Amino acid sequence: MPQDACFTEGRLLSLAEATDAAAGLLAASRLAVFLIGACDVAGTRAAIRLATRVGGVIDQSESTGAFRELDVMRSFGRFIVTPNEARQRADTVLLVGSGLTKLWPDMIERLGLAELPRLGLAPQRRRILRLGGSADDPDLSTLAGQTIAAQDEALPTLIAALRACNAHRPLARSADGDALNTMAEALKQAKFGVIVYSPASLDALAIEMLVGLAADLNKATRFSTISVGASGNAETAMQTCAWMTGFPVRTGFGRLYPEHDPWRFDASRLIASGEADALICISSEPGLPVLPPRIPVVALSAEQSGRTDVKVQITIGRLGRDHGGVDFARETQSLVGRRASAAAGFPSAASVLEQIAERISPGAAAC
Amino acid sequence: MKPFTFTLRGEPDQRLDCAPLVPHRIAPLSTAEIARLPLNTTRQKVTAGDVFHIRAGDLSCLRFEGGSERLDNVGEALAAGSIEVQGQVGKAVGRNMSGGRLTISGDAGPFAGSGMSGGRLAIRGNAGDLLAAPFPGEMQGLSGGLILVRGRAGARAGDRMRRGIIAIEKGAGDYAGSRMIAGTLIVLGGTGRLPGYLMRRGSLLLAEQPSLSPTFVPCGTFPFGFTRLFADHLKAESRAAARLLRGSFERYAGDMAVLGKGEVLVAAH
Image (cartoon, rainbow over the protein chains, first blue to last red):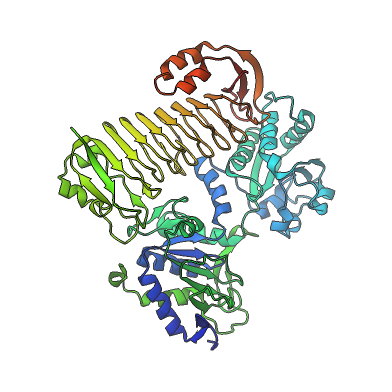
């Protein structure tokens, strides 16, 4: 391992000293928050095991957007299709909201929006429709057959109006009924339609409305949705936490059994309210989230932050470079294995977290 | 007989789960046993006796002297009797309450009255987001009872409610009455954007003109018979709401994006 990997308050440490310091800090905490950024499955598992041991809370840095999706999934249901399936079959694609290609730069290629669907019933050019987000992406504007321009704030009403048009129900005069009726008719003509949206531009109710539109369309044809959401990092943490505890992230172990509460265990709320008294940030990609000034922070990150507000800094390796592992890939919507390409000797998040856990015996941990 | 009293010793340094402190759960216990009930939500053990100075009294009538934003689940599953909190409360006050009276003199956090099926919950201050809303993953909100908020409510008040009455006297945040299945939500004061979004049935009565989705279709202005009957029913609980209900209303049918059998009634001035 490189010599300059661990610090405390500007002083160099060995890995053993750093994990000792982190363990001491966690053992003394009443409520430690584990905020996971980019982390593979093994690292997430180790973080959850350590949180269980110290009665901590698990959250993920992009979970706010992920919970918008999950709230819809667990209270209403969803139709989901993989990007590969969409590329092969979709003859109609409805793009909703702004910033889709900014969030997913190779979306046009991955979804083959300019190509013919290979497995379409009668191969013909895809029909691309856009609801909102008109000016932000010229490539999409060129592809789109029909665009209803709107700011993101207007999307909840537009989606509702489109859904009402699809069901042949009346609208108030304020809505642009002609354009919406034309778009609703185009959606109905689809043999295999896909709605692409981002939770960054929609709230949970608007997503529920959009998924409801897909559900209504499924009465007569096939329709599904793709969310251009957070990167795969949130999904890695969500799925790993789900199979280990039965719950997604924002799960706490303060009472020694897992409790899930998206409001109570929101890391930013816990920190702002002063309920958390230690924070451990884990990210195998460069960069750390904005950290609170008030509580001690242990940072396991892929690069030295050089920041003085971090109590213990341990440099960890990057997935796919320093060590192999498994994480969730948005491109395939599945877990994928990655090999180490050029190991520089930095330890993985999992191995560091396991070393910290070894230094905290379950009995001695109670404060 | 004097109420059984819990006097808060100071601001707790962790969130507390006050669910055990309801009449039917403490009735079989001695005062010493009540003082030993654990309330902690972290691994630092805290008992009722650590947090409150306890004075014995009538076990069907509890009083909390002093409140905190960190007192969660106050009055959980209250079925009979009364609880009065002189101060504020945290998340999910009156959660799964089925009867009795619960009165909060200060503000309440999110999810007040969540899962409630009966009884009366009165909040003299403001209520947080998701008043009477289901917890994540649950399928229905308020299914009975009366909720009165003398101040404001946050976003999505009455989410997925299917029976019962909510009256909010000083306005509500965005998406009031979202996903309503049935029941009555009355809001005096302004509402945020898109009240009634995704509502299937039910009545949303508003004192001020809202910013409605175009999926609410105007049906005309009428004096409604049922609102006057309702006014008599509510007079003793909220005079301001009763006054609103005696007037005429402009009716909007919606949300046409879903079933379209709900209504938003806006006071006609």
